[in-house]
Image (cartoon, helix red, strand yellow):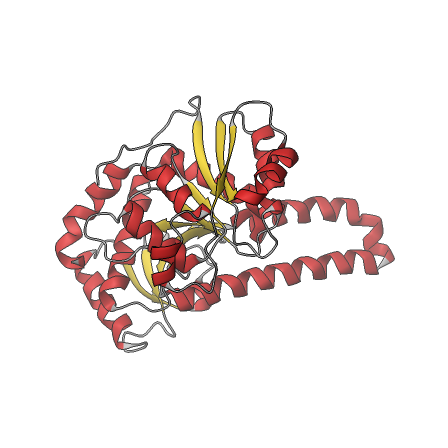
Length: 348
């Protein structure tokens, strides 16, 4: 499917589509986040997709006078319980479908959805297609580490992955990094040990292929406690493992954040120095807060599609929209394809 590459100048208006339906907290979290983004980002226009009954409420809450918002009423939303056949046959007027179609038709340069991950992957593949040579897209995002940011994929677009699909994830990760001017990205596979004989047959097979396919980039197996060392640019895993690793990290971050707050409140000496400690803690929190890393891209889709947590609150939604905008501005379809093409024979 021919499509423009949207590497946009920052001065040019960027239009993003937001599917507000399907989150645990309801669509109002998205409405308030949209209001904030429109107020703070003057170069962004938003197409907001909601069920028909919510159009007026969304319009009233956001109260945008800039002309950069369009609220579009849609039919019945995709449910987390919907089977793929239902999604494909009976949800053609849903907010998710219509948001993706807006990207397909060039009305927007990227899509953000809070809805079902599985449905978003199915519909993105059907409506936007995948990049040449890619069988299955991966949900991917960069997480902060002690060193450089780490692109972790897959985070749950699919639960399992064959050896071939793990190799494709690695190729996608390398291609994305190179398109972002990370010229020699270092890649590893998440495993239960560093030794070559560890892990499932698919993991060991993928490792053997990657040793031959990208010897200058592939660094072998890494364990869970290696995630935050900052040695790698890309970490590959199946969706089940990646999703558990990410959400465990988010839960740990939230617990540590609360524990520090409790300690600052619990001791009078700490309360005396808390202004200094809070300033340092605020800087750390801004780097690691899950809300600031609430968006993940469907890497491998022929377009820019971002998924945010089903439990996204207003803050997480706002950061996810900004993340989508950044991905859309930097998206270079031709550069991605150029990176994938030399490796197509190995990933076919």
